[in-house]
Length: 314
Image 1 (cartoon, helix red, strand yellow):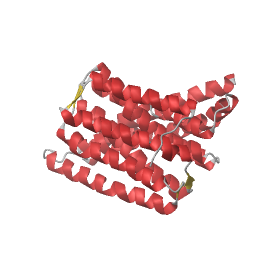
Image 2 (image 1 turned 90 degrees about the vertical axis):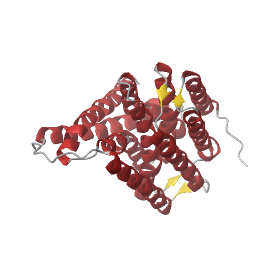
Image 3 (image 1 turned 30 degrees about the horizontal axis):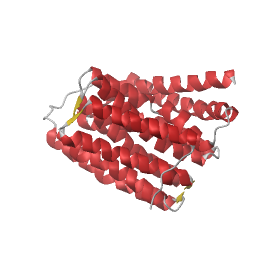
Image 4 (image 1 turned 45 degrees about the vertical axis):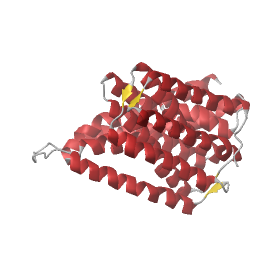
C-alpha cells in the first residue's frame, strides 16, 4: 500500500511538472507561429490543462474501468468549477469581463447539459462522441474569430525556430501521459484496498489529481491580477473536457454511464454552471460570499460520493 501511495503521488507530480513544462513553452511557440494571445490563453492553455483528464480517462477506459473514466471527466469539471473557482475568489474577488459572461459561461452550461442529455440512455456511443466533438466546433470558431477582431496588427518578424522549446514541449506531454498512467495503475490499487468503487475512484482520486494544473494556473492568474484568465481558463478547460475529451473517449470505446452519474453528478454540474453564471452576470464580479456558496456545493458533491445519495429527477 505504501508503494502504491508513493507512485500515485509521483504520478500527480509528473502531471504537474509535465503540464507546467508544456504551458511555459506555449507563448514562445505561439510567438514563432504568430498566433493570437487570446487563442493561446483560452484555447491552447485549456487544451493543455485537459491533457491529464484525457490521459487518465483514456487509460482507465482501456483498462476496463469506464465508470472511473466517466467519473473523472465529471468530477474534474466539478472540482474546477466549484472548488478551484471558489478558492480563487476567496483569495481575491474576480472582476469578470463581458466575453466570459456572455460566451464562456453559456458554453460551459451547454456542454454539461448536452453531456447529461446524451447520457440519459445509460450509454455514450460513438455517435454521441461525434455529436460532442461537433458541438465544440462553433465555440472554437467563435473564439478564433473574436481573437482576430481584437488582436492588434503585429508586424512580421523573424523569430528563431524554438527547437529547445519544442523538445521540452514534447517531453512535457510525455510526462503527462506517464503521470496519468501511474495515477490509474497505483491509484486503483490504493483505492481498491480502501474498498472504493470505480465511480468513486474517478470522481475523487482521479478528479483531484487531474485538476491540479487548472488550480495552479487559476491561482497564478489571480496573483498576477489577470481575472479573465482565471475564469476563462476554468470555463474553457471545462468546455473542452466535457465535449472533446468525452467525445474522443467515446470514439475509442463507447462508455456505459452509471445511473448515479445521470441522477446526481451531471445535474449537480449543470447546477454549478448555472449558479456561477448567475453570480458573474449579476454585477460583473465573483465575490467571496458567492465563492463560499460554490465551495459548499462542492462539499455537497463530495459528501454525496461517499454517502451514496442521489438527486430525484423528473
